[in-house]
Length: 272
Image 1 (tube, rainbow, N blue to C red):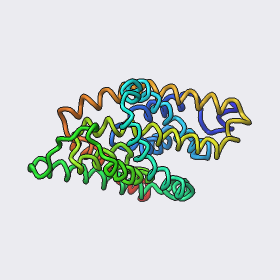
Image 2: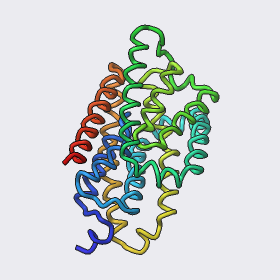
Image 3: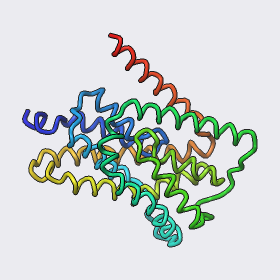
């Protein structure tokens, strides 16, 4: 089949990766981390098209945010302004570090695993601090100040490293500033709209030859996009309900367990 030789991916793999993206994009467990390792697991060739695909299908997940929150967003002009203010630091960092992100962070499995585990530990430690009544989560996003918006934008910029999780960074950053978990999650969804659309279309422009010259490449991108849209729509609604009554400790534990399993698999492979 010609398209497999061309891009190193078939339609079933595109669907699987779309599902992985949709499920993980808004959970604080790093969609990029899961996409990279899922690609390796199902045998997707790690070439420039695969990297483009992994970034582009995030737009499908973002479309689900627009569908779910469009009415709420357009009614609150202040929230729109604060979202754009929070987006600026992330955009600047992403633009400046574009080549480093693509050439270093996406190709270093050991760095990704270390970051993945480390952020999980941060979740557990901070939730313990909250449990000790040293931090009270009382604020809603309607109380968000421009100062806090800028801080959150810089915190989100940390997610340029695969393994951090854009959603996870925003959640922790806002919880440190005493925002409720579900409110922080909602703002992370809204902030994702300009952030990921910008990243996706910037990457798409940089790699436009990969789909303009071959129609099948565009078909694979659309397949992943639509799959990510459907699954992320479900994931968003689940996460909001979950965080109203639960903490980030479960996600932190998941990160540490998965990270340690990957380390053991890597060590076993090296020893064999």
